[in-house]
Length: 168
Image 1 (cartoon, rainbow, N blue to C red):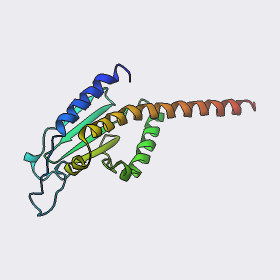
Image 2 (cartoon, helix red, strand yellow; image 1 turned 30 degrees about the horizontal axis):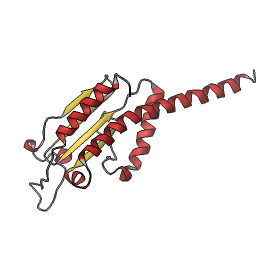
Image 3 (tube, rainbow, N blue to C red; image 1 turned 30 degrees about the vertical axis):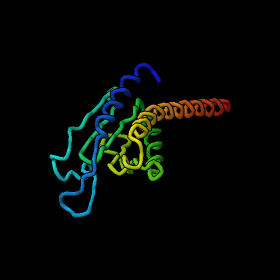
């Protein structure tokens, strides 16, 4: 992990650990329903203040806690058009397989690349520190993965261009 990425991820980690103090809270309007308040926004008093942690103008993390759920939205760095396309295709690929990730949402929050929704039931089944570790590890690896894909695309384009130019 680079030295510039470490403080950003440490801040995200500590904020996540603090915001994951959630509890079981059934719906106030519908009996026997337990819906994530951060998604349905039924009552303002059940929502906590959202926290945005920015590394750069394009790379940021939004943590929206509520009494029974936390939504974590991540904007992945997209420096140029190639990275934008690769990021869109990669996150779309992951979101189509969101059932395997359990906490991943199928649709990200507006202006963000990917979102996770952690509810009280997830914390009953999984360890909190492992969930935080997963999100931090995901944030580290997604940048590496997109950078690797960009290098591979540029290398392939270079080979194609050189083969094309041999004909002239």
